[in-house]
Every structure is written in structure tokens, then in C-alpha cells.
Length: 490
Image (cartoon, rainbow, N blue to C red):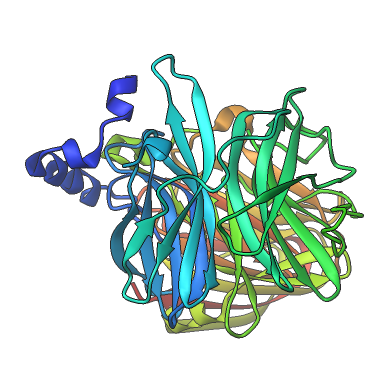
């Protein structure tokens, strides 16, 4: 179905109760609905927004177009949690109801200040000629959960040398000064991050570009993020328009990080290492981080990509969010581990300890459509070692370590229905280890694979048949295997 501009900019407030209830029924009947991932009630979910801890709860908002699985006029949808696992539906938080956000409440972040939660976001408006006017706007939530918007943008226009692509503010505080990073496209079609400073979150002074040696990669850097840990500065960006390079940058758009020295914000020079993709899989974009009361840096990403359809479109909804990941800076690498709270979902478990020799083997109790799987391969004397997930006679999702070529490989060529196959059906990255430890989360229509305590992560949506429930472990050579599977409580 081709969606017209008029359809994309219909608002939920203008839709009859009967029409919306019919859409909700259509979505609820979809066989691909997730069980423990944040997903939209209807329509399309994209970027996580305003991820924060405030008033005793985690707050996680996300971009939402309610009336179909397309990018239309955006709202912020609000969920809260006390444990990062069980999320309360709090409904719409921000509507496109002002002149400065009339065509969408675009992405942004949140920061606590004066016992309130300040939500900074991009207001998207267009004129009668469809020319875009982005501004950076502010809303404030009190401890009762009531939200009000400031009556005008706090950053009223893009800098002179920046195009209409000027969005996704990230706000943080250093000493007594607030800083705001904004993703931007320069007049020469190069992506960058610009920044502002403020003492009160209301009055912002433009400072210039964050100076990196990564400049020249991509035409737009979306969803900038920055934090410090273990004496290092970490910048996360989602560049659009990077060319593939060997195994790298195979998706339509990328998300990754730069690690280096902590940035001195007087000059904003960032001395950093190479750009590294956060997730080596097929669907991952626009991640956002927060710091919780324990001091953990936690990341959530959009389990999807711009410009790529989703199989569930036919049921009136698209996309979900990834599981929360704890981030650890180790040297010049960012490790990502599923937050420990996920263990609360574990139910019945089955364990196996065995040796595999030139075989592909399944075990009693190792099957399902929703589970957590741990697999530890050691004493590797093999050329290939790995696991097949969601298998049946004609379907499987394949993940393995190719020891000959020192590569990790995710292959979804037989994963049932997929989207974006024009960008390939395999994802690979370099890997060199004498062991392979996997922590895998399978939900109805997704797989997230954490390798060797978060050294690498591979995520993919899959839309397999309901009867594809098998699990097989395989070795070309010899390896010891210790593995555990848990049913996950829905």
C-alpha cells in the first residue's frame, strides 16, 4: 500500500474510536507480536527517546506514528519501569500540537533538574511549500507525571552552515554547565555534531562543531550521544550514507561509537580511535544511553532501520526496541551485556554438558520460540562451531565462528520471511578467540546474540513459522559444549 502525505499526517485525535479499535484488533492478531520487548500498540515505533531515571522509575519514551507501519507525524509514547524488564504503558507523552512541532515531535533526550525531568526534543514543522524548519524544544515533567511544553523553542534555528537536517538533541551536564549535542548535516553534505551550552536549560549558546577525525563519513549523523567512563570519552552516532567496507557498514545506515580522551568542552576537540559498529546484525539503529542510580551506563536501541520495511507491516505495526544493555569501556572497546535484571524472566531450565565431534546435534528440552540460551564452546579443535536457531525442515537462523577465517557469521538466508535482503543475508565481523561463549535471547520475532561477555553483539528480526522451534549445535571438528536453556516468563 502506498501511503499519501495526507494519510501520513493524519493524527490519532482525528480518528474515530471504531477505526482505531479495528486497527488494534488487527495488530493483536499478528503472529509475530513480541513477548518481552517494548513494541507499539499500533503503528510504527522508531527511535528510543528520553531514556532516564526519575522519581524512582526508569522512563523510556519512543517515536510513534499510531495509524500505520509508516513514518508519519510523530508523537512521543511513554513507558515506565522499576526494573528495566516490566514496562508500564503510560500512553502519549508529547503530541505534535504546537506550531513549532506541528509536523512531528522528533527525537531527543531527558535530564533531571530541580526535581523535574526536562525533555529536550526536535520540533519538526513545515510550511505550505513543504520546507522543513527544525528547532530544539523543551518540555518538563513533574513528579505527578504531568508534562507541559515551553511556549517557544529554546534553540530557534540551525546554525548558518547547517541544512534542514538538524535534530536529536542529547543533553548532559558537566560541573555546573549543561551541554546539548545536535546531529547535523553541513551545507557540503557532510555529517557532523554541533553543540551548545547553557546554565539553565533555557538559554543556549552555540559553540560550534565537535571536532573529530571521523568527519567526511556520511551525509548526516543522527542521534548523537556522549558519556564518560574509566577516564575515556565515548561518542555514539548513527551516520547515514557510509559506504560498505569489507564486512563493515552493510546495513542501509549504521550506528557505532568512537572512544578516546574525555572531551574538553571549551574547545570540543575529540581525540579518538576508529569508528566501531555497536551491533553487527541486521536491524539496529538510533541507540540512546542513560546512567542509572547504580552508576551503570545502559543502552537501548531501535530494533529496526529507516528505509527498510517490516514483515509485520501487513498487520498494521512495525518494529520494537532492543533489550537494555549495560555498557563497559574496556581499553578502546565498548562491551555490551544484557542487563542482569533479565534473569528475572527465567523459568524452567535444562542443562547439557557434552563433547561434539563432526556433528550437528539437538538435545531434549532445547526448543521453543521464546527463551534465553547460554552456550559455552571450549577446547576448540575445529574449523566451524556454532548454533542453529528456530529450526524446522526448511527454516533455520545460523550463527557460527569460522576459525579458519577468524570471523563470526550470522546467516538468515533460511530465516523465513525477512526484509532488506537487498543488503545481503549474512553479517560478519573479525573475531579471534580460543573460546566461544554465547548468550542468546530469542523472542517471537527476534534474536539477540551476545558473544564472549559482550565483545560483539548480533541482532536480527526474524519472521519464521510457528513450528520452527528447533535448536541444533554443530562442530566441524571437536569442541566441548556446556549449554543451558531457560523458558522465559511472558
